[in-house]
Image (cartoon, rainbow, N blue to C red; front, side):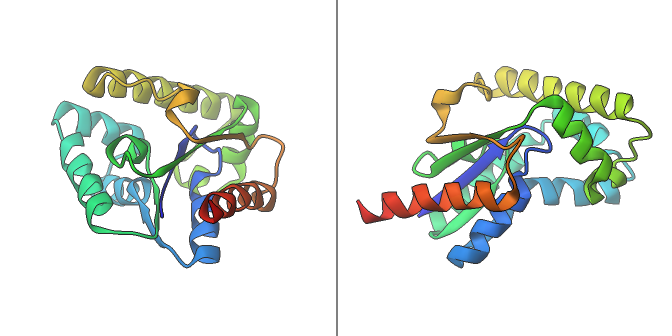
Length: 180
């Protein structure tokens, strides 16, 4: 089975994807980890790096790698904004989160601290702007609306759920599909 997971910032995508990959013994792929590493190497914030990718037309390099992974592998979970789009035969999961909850998570997470939010207001502003840029960029480049629920096989609001609850929900659905 090929599983792709995407969603809103601080919805828990990476934590959930890693948990599922461990339980199912699947390979874990993450575009976000790769992009954060490259941003640090270039001395950029993740927003600056996103702009850099857009301005230098580098999205297609990541896209091609994503498609290659989808063609050449089985039994994986891919944590990426558009993996669902580039791996159409995957089981597509979308995680939602309320903005206030995303801000709280950003202020307490290791990743949020590395993004240097100095206040909740700044976190809210930067999270909102980053999401706006992603929606606009993906619409402009691929003519795809990443906020459209019908793109996905499973949509979960993680705002008031624990990691374990979200993981169990997804595993229950996946196990049900596997039995069919």
